[in-house]
Amino acid sequence: MRNLLAGLLLLLPLAAIAAPMTNDDVIKMVKGGLGDATVIQAIDAAEPGFDTSPDGLVKLKQGGVSDAVIEALRERQPLP
Image (cartoon, rainbow, N blue to C red; front, side, top):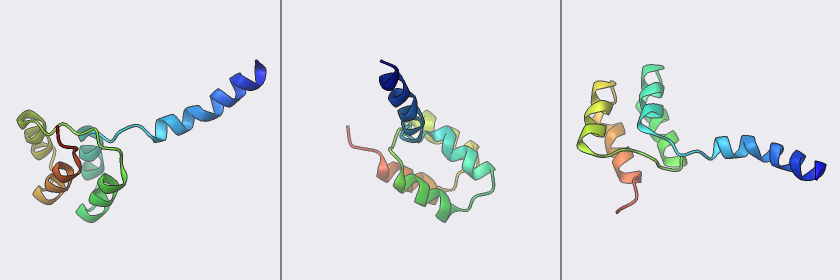
């Protein structure tokens, strides 16, 4: 039982790393001064969890996200 608990605790950081990237994450990177190329690379490497609804896209634009980054984000979003 103790080994099982220890094993589960070791997996918790991996679960946090595997969390999908969100619009808020993209805005945070842009406001942090990261360039488009870096943000796009992060989007391409991430598990997508983006909000590409009209409201979500407007929030990205208001957050200072460039059109190139928004397009990369939209391309990564799985089709419904």
